Image 1 (tube, rainbow over the protein chains, first blue to last red):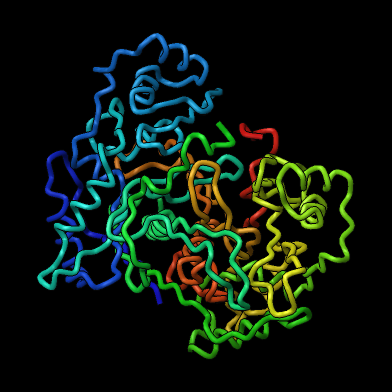
Image 2 (image 1 turned 180 degrees about the vertical axis):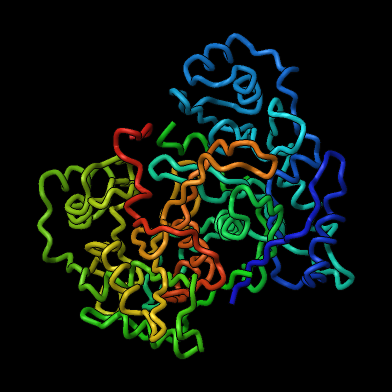
Length: 252
Length: 252
């Protein structure tokens, strides 16, 4: 049985907070500490970004000519569009109300993952960028959360995104450590001895999505989730391994 | 806490099997019967298709001229391509080794979801099509699995698919009943009283992906999963509600 435990009772996170300590306390309170083998801690992108101080005051953003033009096309706030452009390497689609970009980390998502909701008291004129290097942060959190036994949890930094042909959002991993974010099963055999035709499994994305069931994706504000009882394959590959290279992209 | 229980110990499924009875036995053996409120039973597309007799002998398939041409482009078996075309309303992308279509039910996926692995003893010359009407089948299974208390489980028929900009597969719902497959949270407020900018939540897709963590996507052959402890929103919308209409598709 796989168990998904939302970490309720964690405080609001602010810039400069020691996230590892707060997460440890978040695990101790409901009796989930110490970490067990195969534990995966899913940390929402939002609290990592806040702790890193990735909040930007929109009043301090000067839109470039490119941002102004794109703001007209998409009918979005030009200051927000400027931030989106700064955080991306390419615009994938820009139509009224929709701006899809390739984030500097490679992830294709709306608005370079920049968020204006669930920010915290202080006004609507702020935007939260994605973390600087979520793979590296995942590795750091994993190490910091190793208990006395030396067992460190795998860590996934999660966000949510839409899909081109389906309504609604699902979870996605933008950072990962301590597990293979992408599992390669090609060449294995099925139960009848035939070679499996596909499959690479986006394990970290699946984990992020399972965690999203417990965080509810919105108003409840649950910042992290522990998944226990999932046998993890050997290997350690970051979330960057999930990003399809540009030259393989059939939908640019 | 949300619990994900794989139903191990279920027999191999064959055409004509009474799936509801086999699933009930699959729940009884590990003590998961009777069904509780908010239970979601995730049934893999494969066993539903098998029970419906959706297996096709490739030797009986005559490729059309269109299939022959597409087989040359994609370097795939022309008989398989013929089946893919019969099960689709449009070809989205066709390049060497990749054939992405819009399935007749609307789902955009590789090869119209047709599968040649994990089929069962009898040879490699068979292919398994998707079920005829998985939303309707989900509703039928839900009703059939209502216990004496009258509580019926929500049911999700799951498959897996790749994504355009990310490696690896995740779960997807092709059928759903007893829950809102798509949850609309637009207009709600976040914890600071600000309006949530997005979000529609692809709940049934998230559930299918969480279940995939327990089925392992391949060689183990686990046919169904019970998810217990997930508070389900009110409402009942089928998996068809997840499909983005053609006129909103920015990536055809």
